[in-house]
Length: 213
DNA sequence: CAGTCGATTCACT
DNA sequence: GTGAATCGACTGA
View 1 (cartoon, protein in one colour):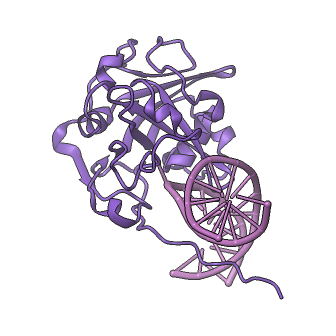
View 2 (cartoon, helix red, strand yellow):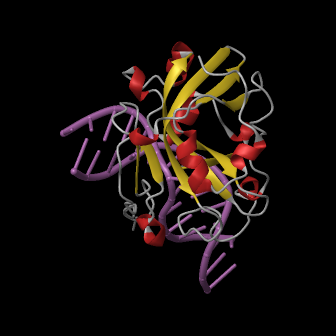
C-alpha cells in the first residue's frame, strides 16, 4: 500500500527528464463518482519544453496547449484523432511547457470500473496499455485539463508518493509515434518486462484518403 | 476559410 | 498487417 500522500508541486518543478523516470512505479489515483481507480505507472514519455520538436508546445503557446505553459503539478489533457484523450503531467516552472505523457500502467484498484469504460479490453493488462486507453480507463477527459493534481488524496486526480520503480528496471528509448527531429530523443521510459507496457510504434504518416471525382 | 493530419485504437484479414 | 473511424486545432492562402 503506497503512502496516501500526493506528490507535491516541488516534485514536478524539476527538469522533465528527471521527473519522467521518477514517476514510474508511482500510483495515480482517480476518484470517480462510482469509486476509486488506482494505477501503477509503467510507461511514460517526456516532452521537453518549447524547443522539443516532438512537443505540442514546439510552435508556441496556443489555446489547446496553454496548460503545458502553466504551473507544474497540473494536468494537460488533449483530444486526439477525433475520439481519444491523453493525460500529461506538467513539469518545470511556469512558462517552460514541459510535460510527461502517461502512456500505460497497471490498474491496481477498481479494475471492474475500468473494464466498464474499456469494453474492448480482453485482459487486465490491456485496460491501460496505451495513452488513450489509460485516459479512457480512468475516465479522464477535457474536464480535467489544467487540474491541480497535488491537491489531496481524495481529489478527483492525483499521484501518490511511495517508492518509484527500481532504477535497474527502468529502460528508455525513442518516443512512440513521434516523427521528424523529435523522433531521435530517447525520452520514452518504461519498466522492463512489465506486461502493461504498450508496444513501440514508429511514426507513420496517414495515407491520403482517395478523393472523389 | 478549406485542407490536412495527429503524442491512437479497434475490427478484420 | 492494413485501413477505417472521427473531430478540431493549426496552417497557410
